[in-house]
Image 1 (cartoon, helix red, strand yellow):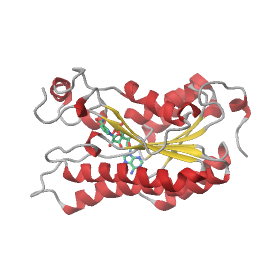
Image 2 (image 1 turned 60 degrees about the vertical axis):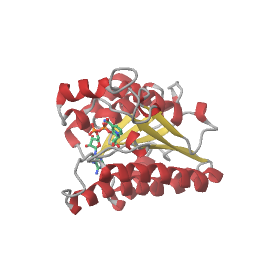
Image 3 (image 1 turned 45 degrees about the vertical axis):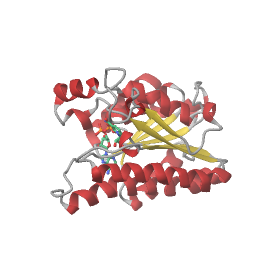
Amino acid sequence: MSDTSSAALRSGRLAGKIAIVTGGAQGQGAEIARAYAAEGAQVVIADVAEAEGAALAEEIAAKHGPGVVHFTRHDVSDAASWTALVAEVAERFGPVSVLANNAGILRFGDIERMPAEEVELLWRVNQMGVFLGMQAVARTMRKNGGGSIINASSVEGLAGMPSCTAYAATKWAIRGMTKCAAMELGPRGIRVNSVHPGMIDTPMTRVHGGDAAMEFGASKVPLRRVGTPEDIAPVYVFLASDESSYINGAEIAVDGGVTSTHAFGA
Ligand code: NAD
């Protein structure tokens, strides 16, 4: 039995939307989930991090009501987990209309030393995860008049970086898959776009050097600061909303201008 009681009373730029946010337990995904709920969507936070996901769902429910949010454990690299997730969303809220395909992992490694298992793990979570997500929601969205899929790529999907070959490969793949999916799913009313964050202050980046890494990163950005999840979430809101109704197959850099330069820029 779907819970539409509190959704019917809600307003906002995403009123009536039913959204899945993968990797929604922390970092950028958590802020996307908060922003979606604040704009009137019903949100399913899908993540392998159970304690963080459940705590965030409680936080959002306390603010917007229990019928607005749900956390479920979900592994993006597992096709069966996707099937179960889409069915659970339909049962609880109704057919999914927005997918923030945000979950991802980061591993650095030199080409000469990086173990093949690490490369494969990146590929499974980042690249296969995004593919399986698009595959899992496409039929439901098509049958229900369309939807919006937002794929998390990176500035590493726009340019290169040493010791980042395996991660960048997945993010370039996401950029490419987004273009193909936009063409294939566009005629069915489904828009597919990619977001390319620069260096964003989240657990993913903090673990690689803390404040010192943030300061170093900031010095490389024309805006002279690293980004925050609050810089990213509004772009996900816009792409989920009908305000972006003619944007399909686009790649949107949210990077403080860091990809505006060639290597000799300051
Ligand atoms: P984060 O590590 O803070 O959060 C990622 C979330 O994904 C976590 O909650 C984690 O539990 C979840 N996750 C990991 N593996 C999963 C799996 N198999 N199934 C489901 N959930 C899983 O990272 P973030 O900075 O919030 O990154 C969000 C997205 O943005 C990622 O795709 C990342 O690659 C991308 N990105 C991040 C940055 C940055 O600087 N932080 C820059 C560019 C792109």
